[in-house]
Amino acid sequence: MYDNDNDEPFGWWGWHWDPPVPLSILQIIRAGSTDTSLMALLWAMLSRHASVIVASEPPIAGKTTTLTSLIDLMPATSKKVYLHGHYETFDFASAPDADPANTVILANEMSDHLAVYLWGSRIYKTFELVSKGYALGSTMHAETVDDVICILNSDPLFVPPEWIANLTLVINLYVNNTRGPSIRRFNTVNMLLPGTGDATDGVLPGVRPLLLSRWDKPTDTFDHRFTNPDVLSQLAAWANLSPADWSADVQKRKAYLDNLHEQAIVGVTSTRAALQIYRD
Image 1 (tube, helix red, strand yellow):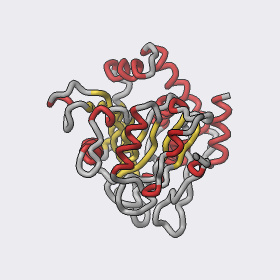
Image 2 (spheres, rainbow, N blue to C red):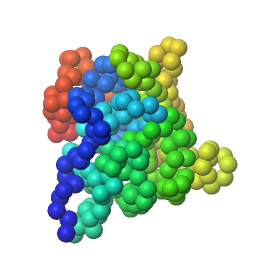
Image 3 (cartoon, rainbow, N blue to C red):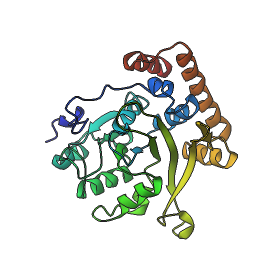
Image 4 (tube, rainbow, N blue to C red):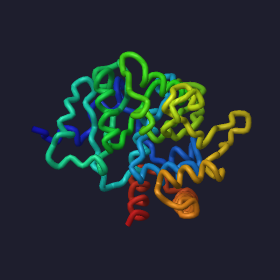
């Protein structure tokens, strides 16, 4: 019988002897990793039960730190289920009160590096649950969105393309140095959509990445594509809103984040309190 063991993080920071200090979304913005425009978009999507994978090739790139901060943008009323890596039984999915539409599955990392990480058939099972309405938050070692898609679809995972297309968001991080002072940026942010099943989809027929934002290294600025009319209309359709209503919602969240940023509200506790005020 399900005993709620998944309600608390399990080996969340992996192999670190001294867990990193969690950061808020406002601290990540203040560090220049992203800006309020992109964070407002992520907030609008994650508040609507979007799934997200934060990926970067090198270790200690800030994947888990970023994911942890993004959890605060998910609905406060959603049930958070923390997976137990190689020990996961998925009993929570068969509990009488299981509610996929209001549950977020959280896996600290999808790799075979540690037993507390998710790998093999358990990743396949996780994506099966996503196809049934659960949201997912996790991290991966992958440099690009195409790498994420290929890893998930390859041996030994073999996640079907139609399940991968349910992923919603893939954030690929850039880091110039994982030891000492470093620059971290949201290098690309893509939305995954069902493809047409042919070569026009990209690296895997059946999955179509839609670029939402790209970091420009020479200028250290973000090229946001999510305001382009075609991309905007696809985001609005995903949210079941008109383009005007979707744009207004994102802009309202951005204005709120701008205000918090100007007030120098940065800490995890104060940021969570401010986000709850917005929800209320």
